[in-house]
Image 1 (cartoon, rainbow over the protein chains, first blue to last red):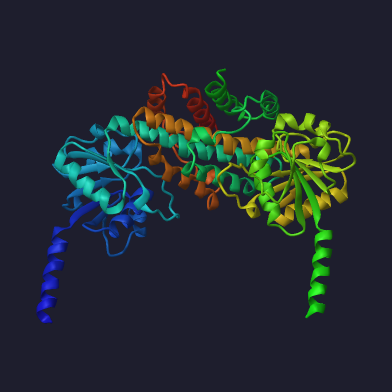
Image 2: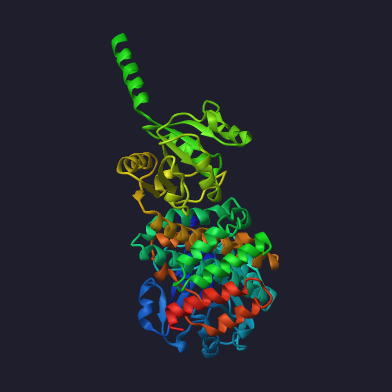
Length: 271
Length: 271
C-alpha cells in the first residue's frame, strides 16, 4: 500500500514537473476566461497573472500568484498577452523577459507587431467574452500562429487542452477572420440595438423580438445563410421597401436600411 | 357504466360543437405551422385548407378537408389568409364568402387593405418560419387586430390557445414591429451571409463563426444590446477600422461596413 502511494506521489511530481507553465498578462475578460479554462485543462498550469492595476487582480483565485510589477514576472513556458488591442505592441516592448514564447490573443494584430525581444506567437479564441457569462471553450475555434514549428506545436497542445477546434492560421488570414467576426458579432449586435430602439419608440418591449432573434441565429445550424434569406429585399418587394424607408425617413438608421437592402437586391435580383 | 359512457359522449359532442372552426387559406410555411399548432390546441379546429395549387395541399394531414376551389370553401368562424404579402389584397377580393371574419397573417399589410366584403382582422405571428424546422408557438408573440370587440375577443382566444404572448396592436404599430423584424431577422441573416462569403474567400469554413453567432444571439437574454456592444467602432479604434476598410476595398460589402461603423461611431463617440 505504501509502495503504491509513493509510486503515485512520484507520478504526481513527475506530472506536475512535466506540466507547461503559463503567465497571463492582463486581467480583462479574455484573461479571466482563459485562466479558468486552462485551470481545468490537462498538461498546462497558470503560474502567475500580471496586471498593472492591482485591483483587477482581486477577481483571480487567491491561490494564484499575482503581480503588478513587470520586474516580478516569473519564468514560464508561455506568456499570454491579453490586453486591449491598441496596447499590445507597446506592452510587448515593455516586458523585461527575453527569448521567451510571448503570444497575444487578438484577432486583428499581426504576430510580427510583437516585440523582437521574444519569440512571437498568437493564441486567438474566435469568440466574444463578457464578464458574467460562462464560456464553453471546447466549442471555440482557437486560431494559433508561431514563428517556429516547436512553438506552434506547443500552442497546438495548449489549444487542444481547452478546445476541440484548433487551427493554424497566418496573420493575413486571421485579420479576415477577425473582420468576419466583427460583422457577425459587433454589427449583428448593433442591428439588435436598432430593433430595440425602433420598438421602444413604439413603447413596445424588445422582448417581443427575442424569439425571432434566437430562431434566426439557430437556423445557421441547419441552413446556409443564403438558403435562410427571406424578406422584402430578397423577394424584390418594392412596395414594402418604399413603405419601410418612409417609416425611417427621420431616423438615423435609414442609411443602414438602404445599404443592406441594396446589397440584398443586387445579390438576388441583379439590381 | 353505460350511463357514464353516454354522458361522456354527450360531453364530447357538446365540446366538438362548441369548438370554433377555422379555414386556412394558403399552404405555405405559415399555413403549415399554424395548422399544426391549432391542431394541438384546445377550443379551435381547422376544418379545411384551401390552396389554388392542389399539389401543395398534399403535405397537410389526409384527414383534413382540402380544396383548390374558391366555390367549395366551407362555413367557418375564422378564415385565415396565409398567402404572400403582395397577393393578400387581391386574394381577399376573390373570396366568395361574405360577412365572415377574415384575417391575414402579415406583418406589413394594413388590416384595412382587406376586402370590405368581410369583417377584417389580423393574426400576425412575430416569427420566421421555414419548412423543415419545428416551431414552439408558445413563445411566439401573436399580434392581433380586428374591426370590432367581439372579433378581437375571438382572435385573442385563438392566440391564447397556441401562444403565451398575445397582444393587440394597431396596423400602424404592427408595421413598425415588422420593420424591426426585418432588421433583426432578414438583415442579420444577410450579415451572416457576408461573414460566410468572407470566410469562403479565404477557403475557411463558415462553421468557425457559428459559436460566435450563437453567443452573440444568446447574450440578449442577459444583456441589453447597448450593454453587449463591443468592437472597433464602439471603442473608436480608428486603426482597425481603416485596416478593415482596406481589406474590403474591392468588396461589394464595403458600404455596409462603412455605414454600420459610422452609425456606431456616432452613437458612442459623437462623430
